[in-house]
Length: 377
Image 1 (cartoon, rainbow, N blue to C red):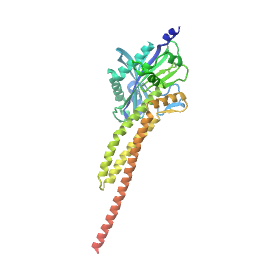
Image 2 (image 1 turned 45 degrees about the vertical axis):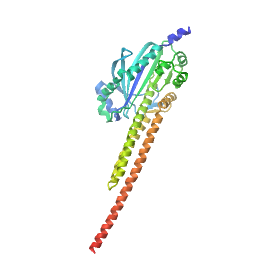
Image 3 (image 1 turned 90 degrees about the vertical axis):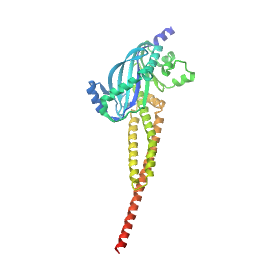
């Protein structure tokens, strides 16, 4: 009797696989203008995102991103033509998340795990990975006027979420963990993992009710949600967006620091009456860079505001920790501190150079007056 229950329960009645790819496309996006542009293009298939179940006072987007619905696509997954729905989510700080959703129904558990791996291989690593660039180009073509200082960044993030809404026989979280092996789905590996690797992979588990479950890993997550809520998936997306943006600014500052050092040396090497102007001009550039990055990183930090929903807050905090968002953020802040110190030093040197120039001018005037007085006498 136990084996019959296990076999029946191990079939996924309904669910889906959500493949995400995240891009940084601009310094910022005017969401109001983007919504208007997309409404004219696609008969209003756009809306501001919100968490479905969580009360706004408990957890809410800082600035609600804009969700736009694209036409369904047909792509080949595991050798079979598969229809998938596509959405894009635009964030005001310049990030775009593309989501391809593949519905699943009536699959045995092992088939479901294989399907997850096939979606990952086809859309993330395989020959159809170029599909993301095509979708992004179509979105950008419509909302181009809403992009503020657009830029083509090579920094991207991928994440895969396997969602089960119902099994053939209802399961609670404990039965699910005791009955089904999540490791092949979460790891993507076909060979058995060591006990230590299995334990580490399954370490971040969360449940609120008896019949829901979330398991997080670095690049995948499993969600069992019988009520069909999407809040956990939305929270995981925001954590990935924050990682994307912090990585982008970390790499931007990595490129900027050597260039900054060269400019400083060049300015200091030109010791002449124009030195103060060189210092002041370079200081203004550094100040602008610091102001821009600081403004955007603050928006990223406030992308999701958590107050009272303890469960989602735990999932969100675990995702930020797992994705090492805090470490990358700290690296960005250290580099910003270096640039701020350089700006202060250059500003002081510019002020000193101006003072020296004024003193020299005063001495010159005094000398000229003396010459004129002696000559006149």
